[in-house]
Amino acid sequence: MEKSFYIEVYGCQMNVYDSRRIAELLLANGFVQSPDPHDAEILIFYTCNVREKAAQRLFSNIGFLRSNKTEVIAVGGCVSQAEGTNIFRNKHINISFGAQTYHRLPEHINSILSGKKAQILDLAFDEGTKFRHLAPSTAKASHSEFVTIQEGCDNFCAYCVVPYTRGREYSRPAKDVIAEAREFIARGAKEITLIGQNVNSYHGEAPYITVGQPKETWRLERLIREIALLDGLKRLRYTTSHPKDFTAELMRVHAETPVLTPFAHIPVQSGNDRILKLMNRGHTARAYLDKLAMFRDICPSIQFSSDFIVGFPTETDTEFEDTVNLAEAARYTISYSFKYSRRKNTPADKMDGQIPERIKEERLALLQETLLKSQVEHNRALVGTTQEVLFDRVGRKENQYIGKNVYLQSVIVESSENLIGEFRNVLVEQSGENSVSGRVL
Image 1 (cartoon, rainbow, N blue to C red):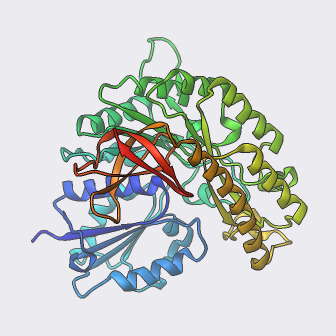
Image 2 (image 1 turned 90 degrees about the vertical axis):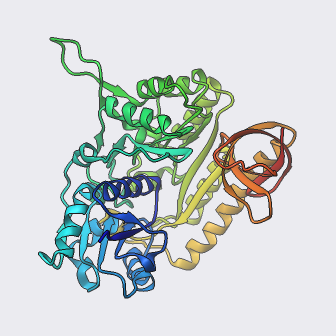
C-alpha cells in the first residue's frame, strides 16, 4: 500500500526549495503527498534555527500534527544539524537528517517502515551530493520557482549559526543551475529566484571548458547574464547577498538586464562600526552607504531592502542611534528587523554585555518606526504609476487578488478573472503601510 507523506516547512527560501525537492524525491520513490498531516503516515518537518527556541517549537508542532495514523516522523534542516543526537529527546522522532543529506530520506523512511531500524541520524556534510540525486519531475511548476546556486557560508558572522548548520560555501556548477532553471521554465515557471546563503559569493564551475586550459569559474554576474537569455523567463531575482561581495559589475548587470528586477536585498545588520566589527561583518557603515550610492548612480531605478539586528551584545544607546540614522539615510523599500537572539556555539553567545530583553524590545520598536516611514513614502510614490505584477494568492475579499511588483511589494486588485500565476499591468491608485492597490489595465 502506498504510504502518504506531509511536509511542514519553516524558515527561508532555501528551506522552501529543499522541501520541494524532498517532495519530488518521495513521489519518485512511490510515496504520495497528503495535504492533511493527520491523514499522512509520514510527517516531515524541515526546520530553521534562526529564531529562539526553535527546537521547543518543533517539538510542540510535532505534538500538534501527529495522529494515530503517523508511522514515521522525520526532522531535517538546521535544527537537526544544531541539535545533533539531542533531537531524539523527543521520543516520537525516527529520522534526523541534514540539509546536505535529504537525498537519502526515501531510503531512511523505508528502513523505519520495514522495522530494520528504529532511529536514524544522518547529518553528514556531503558537499553538493544531493544535487546529483534530484528527482526529475513532469508536474507543472509553480509560476515562481527558487533555484539554489550556492549553499553554506564562510563569513562566520558572530551571531550566525549558518556555517555550523549548512556548512562551508559550495557553489553548484553553472551548467546545472542553468539546466534546472530551463526545466522550471519549460514546466511553466515565469519567475526564477536564485538563492543561497551568500549568493553573490557564487563561484561555480563554468559550463564551457577549453581543452588544455584550467577550469574556469563564473561569478554571479555571468550566471545572471546567461540565465536571463532563457526563452520564456519573464522575471529574475536573487537573494541573499552580502555587502562586501557586491561589485560594480553586478550593479551594471542590473542596469543592462531588463528581466532582472531593479531590487537588491543587502543586509547591513547595524549602523555602528564598532558593532559591525564585533559582528565580523567585514564592512563599515560608510562603506555600505557608499555602495548604495554607487548602485543608484549605475542603476537609477534600483531599490533596496535590508536586515537589521538590534541589541547585539554591548550595543549602547548611542550606537543604536547610528543604526537608526543609517536606516534613514538608506531609504529602504522594505526591511526586516529583529532583536538579537543568542545561538549556541556562536561567538556572540559567549560575549559579555548581553542586552536585557526590555531594552531590545524598545530599540526594535524605534527602528521599525523609522523603517516604516521609508516604506510608506515609497508606497505613496507609486500612486499614479503602472506596475507589472505577478499575482500569487487570493485576498480575503471576494474576487480579490494579491501579487508582487518588481520591488517585492504587495499589490492588491479586484478582478472577475482568475489572476493566479499571471502577469498584469496595474495602475496604482492607493497606498498603505504594507501594500498598494489599484486596477488591472
